[in-house]
Image 1 (cartoon, one colour):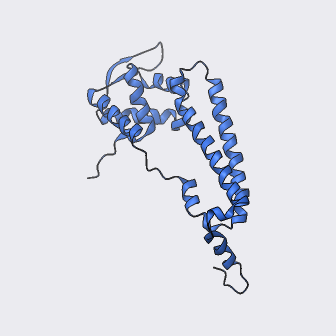
Image 2 (cartoon, helix red, strand yellow):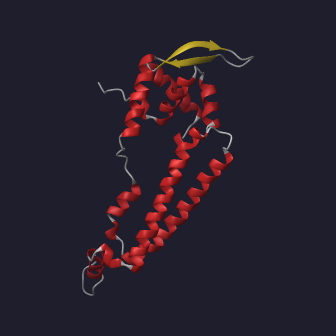
Image 3 (tube, one colour):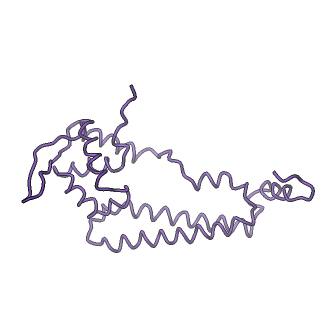
Length: 206
């Protein structure tokens, strides 16, 4: 029998459990809080998936229903709270996330590791395109921060982290482009020789 995957590997489930540590809530209230704190932008939040992860957390024993409540003519809503095991598992998982760098696949890093397949003269224009896209992303992060002035700064810290990453990548792109265009020797000889050999007359095209 396959081992059931820990629901906390899902960012939405992780967020739901963390929010429930603040106070018992029903899923509708959790959804409102996700939007209020702009967290829905980071975790691909959808209304239907919220109820799915609540069910997964309950089946995993991380949360439990405490009571149901009704507001006027609305359907009954079940209020949940973390179990002791769920709260401890959340803290263990968070300790690992903060302390241990992840091994997530990063597309740009993979492209850099194989950049030799592209002719050196093609790369600066590609980097310029990436730079423009990153500048747009940075502007979006600034816009979120500007619109969320009334939100507690702690709940915007991931936007500041992402902005720092974008700005660091912009600095890297500028340095890499500068080397390609003005100091190619700093990148070694293999890249230039590799493409010079492939473009030499009489060489087979592979």
